[in-house]
Length: 60
Image (cartoon, rainbow, N blue to C red; front, side):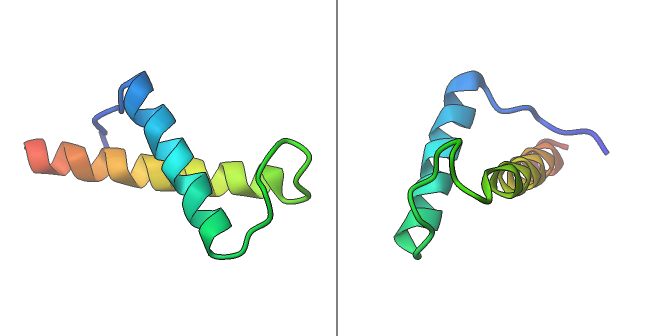
């Protein structure tokens, strides 16, 4: 499947919003020292990829 890649600024904003959402619902402060940092990055990337695929579908 093809995707519409987010701009750098959009990705940075998405990442900030994603981390804020997790922290809002009880995840401890997210930084590279977080015990689940690798898993959080994996989830972030999957959600970003999903959004990019959805944006591509809307354009076709």
